[in-house]
Image (cartoon, rainbow over all chains, first blue to last red; front, side):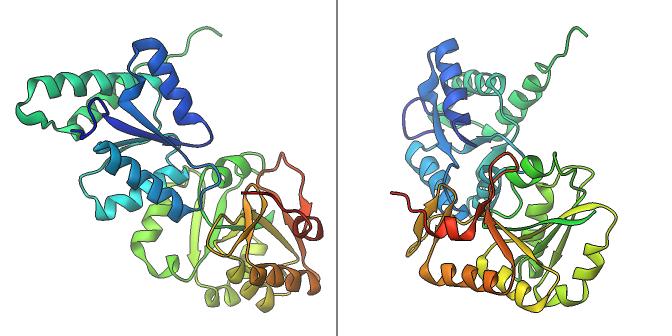
Length: 139
Length: 163
């Protein structure tokens, strides 16, 4: 799944969204280094696309988590998918989906021969679990 | 309601537009004018994906707008005219007297551009084009979000920032 040991995905979003989510993962699990952060701040679309592309290349990850479905990081990743059709995109990311994906990806890596895992299936499963964590109480 | 904002933003449809402006202005439609996007189904699908439910998006070339602008300006809903470049806006301004305001919302770093604001980088040619719009009587301001102060063009062009 990854050329860099331990990196499972890129997290990309507005401002310090990615840094913030990753810092939360680090605080909760100590595994923040499993994610690479990209911010769209100050970047034109083409430059942002290059940043995401570079983050995927350098980490060896194939999954990108973004914040808004309409955000520029999402658009950049969708453009990349035209030429990198193995890239998996998950929008609306939160800390729960990152942790679900992290643990399932690491378990799949450990269980698979040669480190090959179906990251799309893992991302789907993590997104489904994370949806259930949006809970409203009170009022 | 008509077109409430005529925006130059090289990201076209993205978070600041659909949420940052979309919520306070209660935007119901976006008119995206771009010759490349208007002739590419793939590009249009990409941008449609970014538009929330309850908001329509219409794609046009600059030439299309000669027969469309008045219709959008008299639309009962709140809308935004969105282009990706200063040159595209200049073509619209030159062709339509009805465009009296221009919002510079996002022109990012590229070769030959100097930084004016965190979200505005301009080449000398682009500065001249914006000045030309102003000479035509168009009010040109830079403003990324409704919560920030619109900066008049003269002030924008007197501003410089390092990297």
